[in-house]
Amino acid sequence: MKRFLVFLGVFFVVLIGGYLQPVFFPADNMQQEADHGRQVVSHTALPYEEISTSGYAAYIGKETADFVTKFGEPIEKQQTGMGYELWVYGEKDTDYLEINVRDGKISAIKAFNESKETMPFSIGMKLSDVSELMTIYSNFAFTYKENNYNVELMEEDMNYRPLIAFDNKTFALLFFNHGTGKLAAVTYLDKKTLLTIMPYQLVEGEVIPISVTDQVSGFDAIKSHQVIQIINLLKLKEGLPAYRVNTESQKNAQKLFDALLKNQKNILSLERAENWQFSKEQMTAETVFTLTNDEYQKLLKVGQLDKKKATGMYTEPVYDPTFTVLSWFSDSLYHSRFAHQEKEDIGVAFSKASMLVLLQETEKEISQTEESE
Image 1 (cartoon, one colour):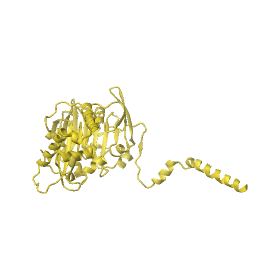
Image 2: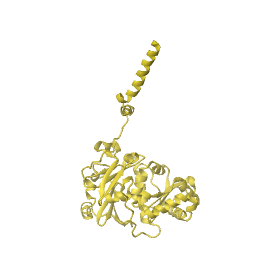
Image 3: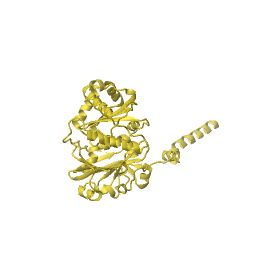
Image 4: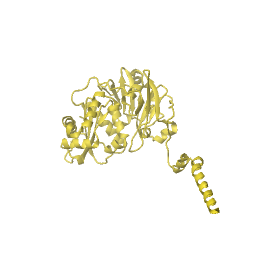
């Protein structure tokens, strides 16, 4: 009888201890102990706060005259066919800057340059540096034209593409290179541009469809050159060799582009073909169509290119090519395709709102290169 009572006593002590352990030793505390000594960046789902407007952020939504007065005329102006004009500043990579101008006002600024105008951010800083200056939020609720919107960032977004709000009701999207973890560019943008490119999950509200106006017939050599320039700029910042551009690689990219249109039944399943058609009809960031790696390999086979020596991407609709490239370099899946140390050739076929990028091993017998098409 005594042994039985002792057994019951021990049993109840163990049982009560098991139930009370979470009270005295919460799981959060245990996790904090496990994470001790490891850098942890704080992310929060609390209602976001706006930081003071400074630098380039102050020009978003303003007439271009003020910007030109301070920074001068751009070295190039391009008609995009997407409802905005692209202004390019900076002859050197360290000075490179892009401005989106819509209806005479600045709708977006893409800063790659090491300028005080990007403060409190600076090109090359780490996410932990940003976290020391401000809180990184995961949810943003705001109104645009009397409509409510609620944007949610996933963990990958907060680590490589965090969103920052300014008190002039504009935003900054920080792009961190997935290979180095360093800030590669800061994109300042208004609400309409954010709702058009929408790289995050939209919990409430609808994205703004991409408005395609006048487009260059056939392949757009200007946009192709722009994409190659941005890719090489980001490669060099990472300490990787720039891609070579030559006539052959450009022809191969255009050949693959045409092959996809003519042989989609051999490349895409019926469901994927329907998804592609739906993307063309909707023309929104939520319905972007991108070839999977397996589909791209099938395309290389159809195009009679060596699958072992080539890779690439195909995506549409593309509203802003520079934004798309920055998204690739901040994404682990796509960044790995650009991270090769070997010398490679690049070809880009851009037609209307569709873009195909071809990356190939450099053939030894090809020696003549071109800086642009």
